[in-house]
Image (cartoon, rainbow, N blue to C red):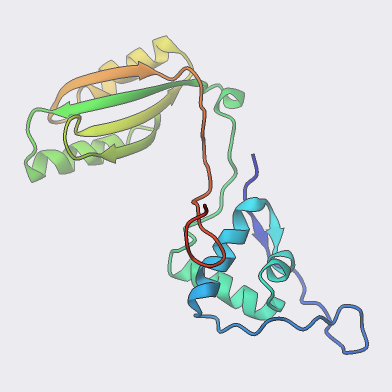
Length: 187
């Protein structure tokens, strides 16, 4: 699985007599096309700023400025390594559906705050309808999951029911968002 890590590198010398001189397509840093073009190229793997600039037809400096702007405005929220959970002893994954017994603002806030403190929780989403929450947890094995479920999750404020489903196999995982250089969705 590829993950993006952008590492700044030295700008290339751009003399007209050099093979390195290649005119770049002029783009304004705030152009809507550029806003989607950079993220659309990024999920392919680890890229230097120079490689990214080549892919989006910009010189290094404007590409680097646009990348920093995407980070500043939180379009790009961060960079990370994607780790195989089984390789670190957390290959037992469970999806939990949580139904709340009450949904007043105080109970919801306390539940969500407590949920955020449980290290085994990988994803947690509040839903419309029933169940109220869908949670993905990762533990070492069934016994560890049961202990975490009984001692941490079931004791959170407002929990009426927990329904667990053990993950057999991941089919789609950490897929990049379906954006294209033109700003639309991929076909």
